[in-house]
Image 1 (cartoon, rainbow, N blue to C red):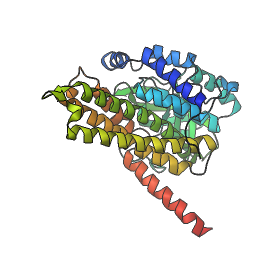
Image 2 (cartoon, rainbow, N blue to C red):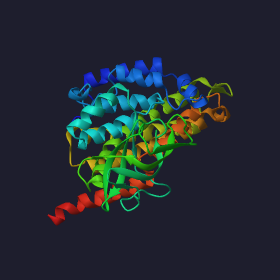
Image 3 (cartoon, rainbow, N blue to C red):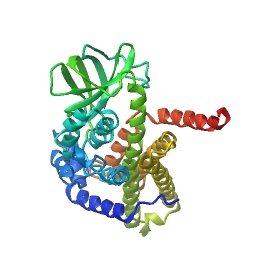
Image 4 (cartoon, rainbow, N blue to C red):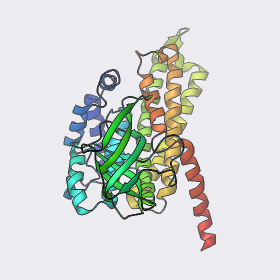
Length: 374
């Protein structure tokens, strides 16, 4: 079985890498980090114009109609460049929710805008500290009006559309909320990575339109979050590879005691460990991409595996990239901290690493018990 990407998909990756190298150098990431903007608006619009945002969205709804494998390729390059754009919230989550459960009218209304970058979407499900479970959802919908508080919400301060998990009649359903409408207030939160903002959203009788079947919200959320976990894993793989390259380049150039520091055994071991972690994460991400693109029953296990492996890899590579750079690696002037910030921010996206580790264990047990039950 061939898990590698096709020549056409590799060409797409090369095109995305060249585009992001030109439009999103580290200085562009720093401009968002140090400036007053929550994301790079110009880059976001350009990504839409290039068709990157609409890669997996059907042509009938304003997308390019390629597929999830192509979106995985693009996600890796966005992660490699640390692109300060709301791709995860808008494309991996909001657009996937609409494609999975939206009515024809909902798809026609929102997907073309998401594909073009005209609209920013998000998914609001957490309501504070602790692990998010079906029982922890307290927000309610009554008579088409949503009330409750969601925090933290990725890109909540800039979102135009929110998919919100809330209760109606005691069961969890999903709802579309126009964030420009009445009954919505936002509060920006301070985070370790301001280039991927978080917010608290408060709804008070905000108009809400059901997405999908009533009472099916938690199952649908789990399904779409598995898809998003694989796409985020590719972002983390891209970040891991770039952090490894930075460390390697510095180790070959930096001289100490008359020779490159890369010749010292301790540095060699550090770089080797980074390489092993990044390679393992890539292998698991490819497994997830295969499951996602084929609709395999292996998707839940593949998603959890990719998520855990990629999170460990990105955090490990980002941390050790700083160590390879030594004292200079801790300074603001070097770019190492940009990767460290992003690695820690993504580690909490869609739930913590321990949450996904528990999911992986549970899903492996269920898979292993299935033949005996049959």
